[in-house]
Length: 391
Image 1 (cartoon, rainbow, N blue to C red):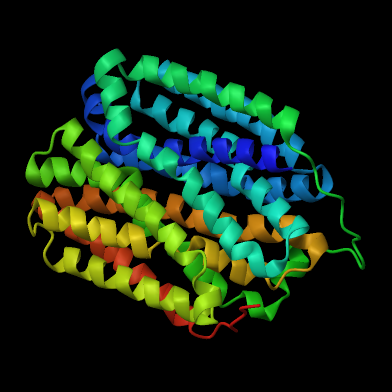
Image 2: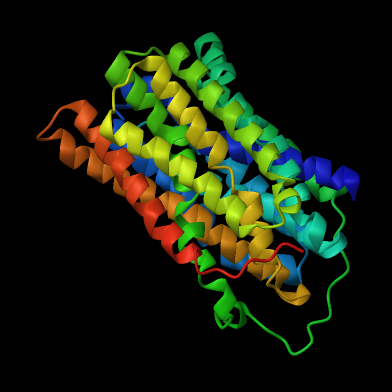
């Protein structure tokens, strides 16, 4: 089981890489394919939307087929196949197609490991294990920053994507060979996704689950690149370094949150405290969108660090699910989180395009920051009514 989890973590490294690497490629894709900020926002959103759409069938597959077959087959077909399509791209919409396929390929990897955690380990350990997997896998976030910028400079973006296609296929094969499916739970009384939706305690979590990850994922995955390029004239290497800083902050934040529910004795208030600090950073960037290069990078790092509440929220939700619905439960929460990022990437892309037609670039980025801040206020309001679970 441990070897299989290590390999699943390698698969999650790929998932983190693919959701974040467009920020570094924004300059070269604009030059070679004519893909601007709006087109790249749509392409980034396609990864998150297809990833989210797959969570319902992935949840069924985890409960019925097991994590081994679900993760290996989809990563091979979607991850490797999508990276190959990306490498062959000739027009901006080809990038959106490729990102959609890659989203399908990455969709089961993290949930396969969470499924194993939920079924094999004690519930009190879930947040810590989830944070370790998330933090370690987030090395892919770092690989999609300065190292990718170096690789693109050395051998070009197409060769780099062919390399990622080969790595994705290799990891899929290793998952098929090493991951062990946990014993199936007794489905006493049956149940489905509809059974989860009938749980009143789950509803206050959902609005914040939809919006909490969007600011850090949206900035790191795309907006930090065009933002620093347009407002400060940053080169690809400078954007890569800034992305690396934000990526390190996101990883550090994940490990920071891992034990916090047990230290504080609450999951709810750990999440509220962290997201309030994210909200403060977004409001600052909204009010002063060009505070200087290093203050901008520092505020993005704050958003990345304190926005890493995902494992705590997943643990909060998992505490509500019966064992035989764990697969569908965690994938449904993941659908909300990733789907929210996808929708908000597309919306911010359209918002950016509409503002730039009448105002300066800094006003367009201020609008993006304001949008993220407003959605966080919406999610936090409902989460205040959530029932705390910290066992």
